Image 1 (tube, each protein chain N blue to C red):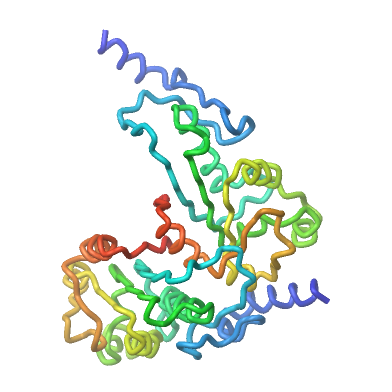
Image 2 (tube, rainbow over the protein chains, first blue to last red):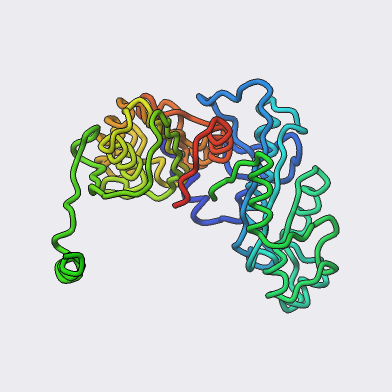
Length: 181
Length: 173
């Protein structure tokens, strides 16, 4: 049975990546129930009481039009699963630092459509929900210039930094750890 | 003399120092002796974490082996073995290579896990392997499927955040 379930899961994963949200064993998280589904884990790595997570993500890859950026979803999952594990929501601080093509995933619907033959930004709703949940978004100002993206093109609440390097350096100095993927 | 040395180096790359095994792991994690300029301050404790996703069926997983090389090369250069703490955070297909033999065989058409002996030896020397619980769940890997001593974490992001907050430096490649 277990092997059958495994094979079925793997087949499902291989055949239908779009079903990722309903993957077997994954359920909705407590902060953003419709984003970043989580799996319960018998963890061997205890989270010391009082731990304040400050995590920076680096995003360079752009999602295909109409689809949700995997890395944006990973940030949502990070928030969901640590709160599910008992960490207070205010002690999970997340910053997403965008540069290169990923900048497109931060565009307002009309600015995105203009650049993508009328298609929709599949990450826009997730970006708004994460912003509402207190997650910070920064776009590399150098990338923005290179891609001719103005601040007014960005989803409200997304911030601009001098560069992605600057944002990473400042956030690491503030005690943020860098997620390597 | 110096120009002779440079000419000799340019002419015969085969003369480069040979990688050597040990002193901690003899059969893997070979390292090359280096006339290095970066001093390791006396008493320094090195806590270092690697991120590994790629599987290497039939071979020693190069991501795991790099962690062994880190230990060999630093102990060979005078750092006490107890002062080199290494962790490997594993997500994605490489999780397979941390499973028990029967589990690995069942998942890989009866094949043997070429990294198993290396992983066991590394665990015995205190290397920590931390599996992403989210990826393991998606792959259908349970805690009981893992080699004894391999740790399960909530997620790879979680393990990285905790280890970095505990002073582990992140290897950037």
